[in-house]
Amino acid sequence: AGDTGATGAAGAQGPKGNTGAKGDTGAAGAKGATGPQGPAGVSGYNPLQIATRRWYAASQNGQTFAVGGGPAGLAFDGANIWVANFWNWTINRVRASDGADLGTFVVGANPIALAYDGANIWALNQSASTVAKVQASDGVVLDTYNVEFWPCAICFDGTYIWVASRANCNLSKLRVSNGENLGTMGLVVNPGP
Image 1: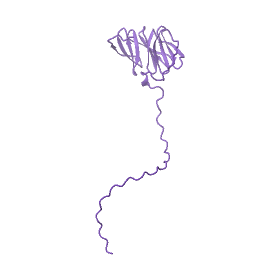
Image 2: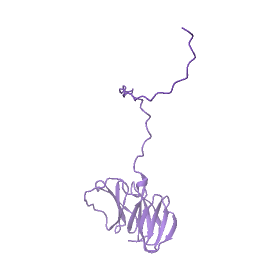
Image 3: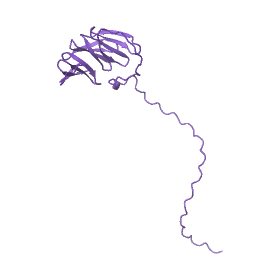
Image 4: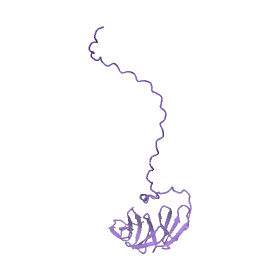
């Protein structure tokens, strides 16, 4: 036999073959290590939900509870219902879960409306043209601030307390920390109910 000749040129690529049958599933791998513990979640109530007043499943039971004379305004602090008693110059704290009376607190002349700021109840005293800042944990009146004549409505926006005055058609903005009036705006129409 003679010597091996030079390698010839590569031939054209053949057609693609069919996909083969799927193989059997392999055995499960070993369980991985447990990951690190995540950060703690928020405890208590979310202060951003104050304005929505939806921190609980609504009770469908119709019940009646005695409070002071001339109940005129309500506020909810996440656990208790606060009631402004217009004729008694007081507010009541009533446990929302069972209606237990948790105390009656004197706040000023003719409280008509209430607001909750996340720590305190603000009682709007119509005849005295004042607002009392009441510590929600124990009902202690922390301070009382003058507001425009004949106030009729109050609310908390998450940062400030707002008070509407019926007689002067004004809206006042109060600082929560010290009750300072940060400005009063005239309203076009009578803001009261």
